Length: 219
Image 1 (cartoon, rainbow, N blue to C red):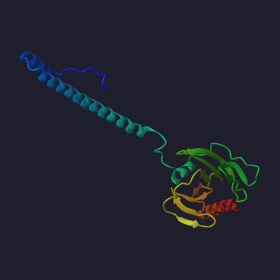
Image 2 (cartoon, rainbow, N blue to C red; image 1 turned 180 degrees about the vertical axis):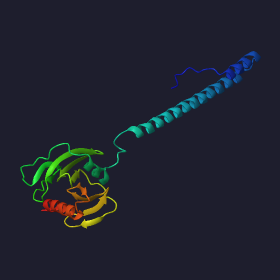
Image 3 (cartoon, one colour; image 1 turned 60 degrees about the vertical axis):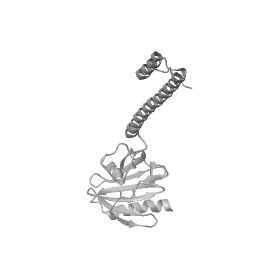
Image 4 (cartoon, helix red, strand yellow; image 1 turned 90 degrees about the vertical axis):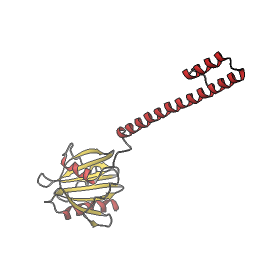
């Protein structure tokens, strides 16, 4: 039910004054009053529609602005390139051995990092990062001359473009070069493993190390 007081329009007032001054019959007066009521209702509806339209426009604009600044939904997944960049960020903590002499305490989910001491490598440190919401741990091996960086990211990253498949069984290992570094990428228990080293370290050595990890977890 409409509770707003009906406001007179100047034209309506002039028509009413003319009818009264000329002594028009009651039937004509009633018809004019009825038409005046209908005109008022139409004006009221049109006005509310305009207000509603303006409010809808404001709401749409605010929604678009919020979509541009809101976090989460528009976040893109990390890439192998993002993971490779971690190798240049350096160590932030020591690499600590676990109770298993062949493994370090560092891990992502149920995949741990090897010590690789039997392979002639020495763990020199590690770092922990978050890439687009994904947990990532990187362990550094070897000396300053030819360090190896091995990162594990919690999730299946898209395979990098280019490169070649170096091994298919028991785990697919892809080999490529990027930024003057040899790189191998593989997946382990739903995680993505990325290992890289300067070109002084042969790609075949990285593939062999990755294959050893894959064989350990396939056993």
